[in-house]
Image: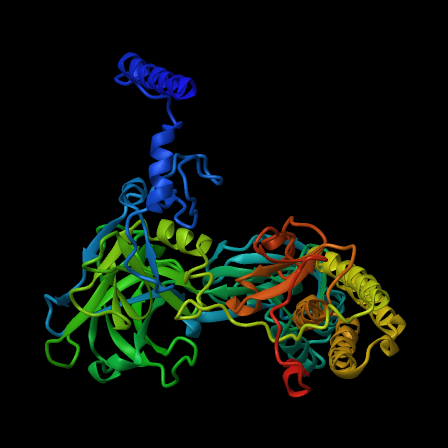
Length: 603
């Protein structure tokens, strides 16, 4: 009874203490970033998940700070999608990223027969010329000395010393003395000099003065701009050798790209008006004079050409131009367009993010689209989007970065399982029956492999080839008799693949070919280590989603730090650790049959 009273008194005292504490401190400000114990218990009991507004891949059972950016975690709102193509974000993240969307629809052109075009200014190839020297000799002086200099027809451009001309002048003077006896001899001497482009006046001057000229000037045959200088002072040139390449820019070509869908709407003679950002407010007008008969197989476009008089040289080659084909054939049409700010370019693929309607939390769907021609601040949509969809026009990069960190579909990682299920391992599990000696031999092989990896990180093809020879030696040193049954058969198949790709890597001199073989070598070695296990070692399987033409590639490293062997210093830190191979690694068991152990990269 006495004990019961003591318990009652203790409980009562605790209750009074808690009540006093609440009265004294309950209405005060709570310490930042330190939730109350009752809140934590409530969260744990309710199964609430906490996440980061900027890094939605973070999932924790209690509040705290984001391990990536240090921001306070917030409660995760109810998820409504398991689709790896859909990224769910918190409303706070949407605000912080300043994500804005636009509903796309059909855009009817104001000009019922107009086609928007883009292109470049190019020189008129018919006005190109080479300035040659007509007499052999040594260049004593150049009056035109740099690329881009303007040359006018008849302008003195060089001074040449020619022993052949000196000899010809002597013959001329001797023939002049015998003119009364043999006038044909004098005429032949004059014609020899005329053949070398020496004028009649200069020839008569030599005869009258009786003095031999040691150097002769070279005059420009055509006007134009110097596009390439081929000689320097002191060079010896042969007759007919080019001194300069010239391009006359008084008339230029305006070349526009036309998609094959629009070929039926254009014809020679159509009028095109165009502008260039280099000359704001200036509009040029021309007519189509030529349509390229060949389509570019990569871009699916053909060029159309107009000719423009270039008074004052305002239009310069390679200038970007934007034109409108005013009198194109065809009826009024409607094209679905998407703002340019919505598009993420990834080479052949173009990516946009579409807001998913009727979701409990802000959700954005990854979408690959096919685009057509540029129309001002938008692109024509050929496939991938429908009218009325809401696309992200500001903040798409933030969404894509979050998706990539969350291992969801992104422009750098588009090869994901649609159902979100991870692919099963294809390697069998022989780790429990593999002798320690064999595992140690595999570790030695892996260390040789790491030297190849380091050489490719440094983009050193010669070193990579040499270290591949060490890999082959390590393979020869492995005792296959340590294995029996299915394990032995599996190793024989992998050994063949390892030797083949290490041998090709050793023989290759091009580093990109070596990296391709290194990918296959890595796949075989990773499968081998997973199948047989490791002992007293820790290796990290790392993955780069951009390698192998954006299909991704793996490699093995002895440390967590990412040093990418597929790109070297171009993208040294691109990648992530996906598997840790240590003595505790457990490989998901697969069927240990001969058929299931075939290597998929027998090249």
